[in-house]
Length: 328
Image (cartoon, rainbow, N blue to C red; front, side, top):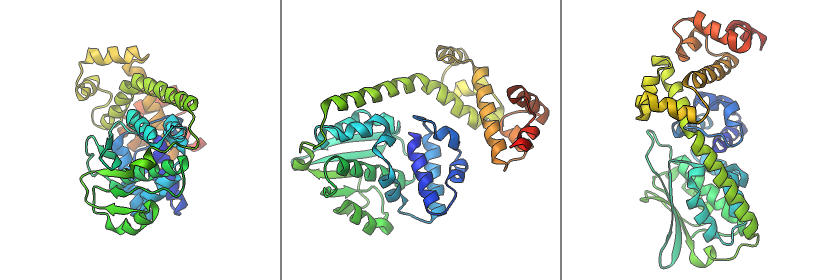
């Protein structure tokens, strides 16, 4: 997932009087990493963040707040390209074409019926403990972009939600301004055909093409770096159990150890370099949190002894872990 959505969730938590940065940390998301432009987070962390945010704010309708707070640029050139599309139809087609930008687990379709157009979405793979608010927020954001592009007064003819979240039914009716169907087989926004085919006041084919190219370039960079991202993610998960074990990582990625090394080398990495960078970044993050003991951090980074961790950390920073924490 694009990390901008996670940042919006954290902001919503902060605006509700709770610690938004802490909810990111508790979900396993490094706030500094998430704040970097174009960074991404695993779907599992994203789902955990939604659960924690709703639990701490005690707001089951948090998806409405998050979806409405996202600016168009939060979804990169896709949101900006949406605003300068010829019609809502071409904006929806843009979303379908570039859906991997928002989430690699999204399955978004644009369907035509005799009387309407439907923007339909489902997770490709249903994550464990799937939080329906994550799907609702994307529908809210899509509706917000439609209104920014055309008019605040437009409404769908129907909204379909694949859950029975009746506690938010009235709030959803007020925002979307139409019939809400619960327990539907899919998540969908249904629109009148004439509305979707109407020329948008901000239509600008040149700007639309420029934003499409920006998204295309971003996805090309992401595809190149994605293998290294997967290795980092697996290292975070396996370091406490097995340490930096290439065979374990290769098995999880369904490749040989030699292929793992070759793929990383193609991207300018070695396994040791990637492991050292990740351990350093995690160690600094954990020490700055001040909640974990140095013994806990040693275990979480896959070191057998605190002395080994201490030597590595001093090589990276010039300080022992204790000295670094004391200097904060």
